[in-house]
Image (tube, rainbow, N blue to C red; front, side, top):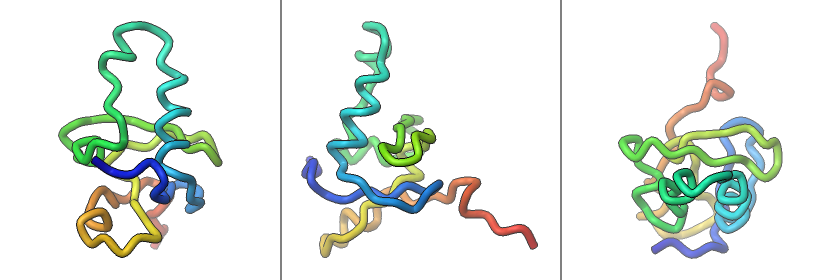
Length: 95
């Protein structure tokens, strides 16, 4: 289980917010019982896997990202640093 106080970086705006802020904001957007049942807490490592196909709303820019696109930052835990990190469209540079 991942601590709710770790920092998570948004791939769109590159700002950080705590995992708890991401988690709570996204859960508050679940409007019915089916959505609430399907919700996967970010405290579970599987939320950062591509195959889980989960989406979370950024507390800063309010854009939605897959869990696999989120990055945990500002920690010394190598296991957490390996989670997520897939690029978002905001990370692509036109060449």
